[in-house]
Image 1 (cartoon, rainbow, N blue to C red):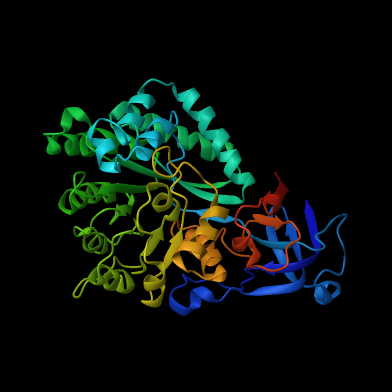
Image 2: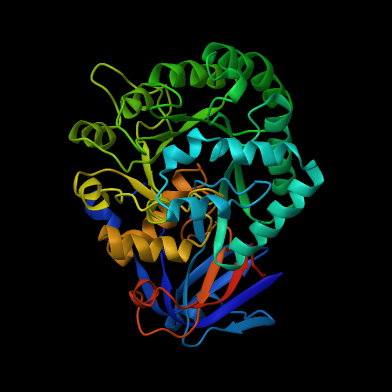
Length: 426
């Protein structure tokens, strides 16, 4: 099927070629006024200014959509979520309002352990149905590509159940989905004093099945005080890497304990959270390698720093130092961290607005970080993240707005008119 979209007020993120954006380049967001897009079988076949239409598309297709007054931009690429979970945790929200900290709640069996307990009680089918509903909700908010982690199983059965649900979502959804194995989210109570025992369980019993059933693309570890040390993270990641799983890592959320340095040694695809960054951490992230070290042959040394501002917002923590990271030439992406405990929202529109309002990112920087750089953080840059010939026609159509900056400025309004995934409106 061929579809022509005409009279687009402004086509945002139109790029002939793409690269991971860092530093000053992050503020460059190419656009075309009074534009068109030609879509063939769900793929962008051509685009340009309306005055070029007769030359580029001499024979008009039957299916023509008039986008008069609308901005069109690539769908959001949400590269860090925990979208598969059994139940919400609003009771902990009340605990937070009463003054308990994230660590306090975790210490009394809340947090990740709470979600793990709830997950054990639901079937795989129930888990799939609830996750599919959330996936449909975020797609209507403009998300066209998404990474989903396990990590609420904390047992062989539980982790495999989550990953099988994610695999089924991949099969049933038109969204581009990546799966990440996060068995090392925290230590189950029975392994609280036996870290090596749980690490052995991950390496010897979870990873072989995950590899055999092709259940994950990446491996993740929550590297944090009271959770997994940088040394434990390295052991787990190297085991995952032996099965072809690249590291995408939780680091520097609460403390800087050497997670960035370990991630660089591991040639991690991304390091996520980054609320607590030292000058040395920023230097390492901007360089991507440690002196004397080099990435595996054929791989880029670039490591994406994924910022999750809605988690900082919900937990009332300091926001990530986005301005300093950008000015230090780091490559950053934005993601929702959608999860029931610390970021119960997958609304990337709010993520983008919050990044401007609280982290002083320019609208162009935030949009690039939430689209093309987010795609790079999932190795989907050849499929999504920009208006580029050959990529999927995953598009956001705005309601009439006066400017691009209005998307972040009017953060409380739903400014999306409709969303297209692979050339079809949802």
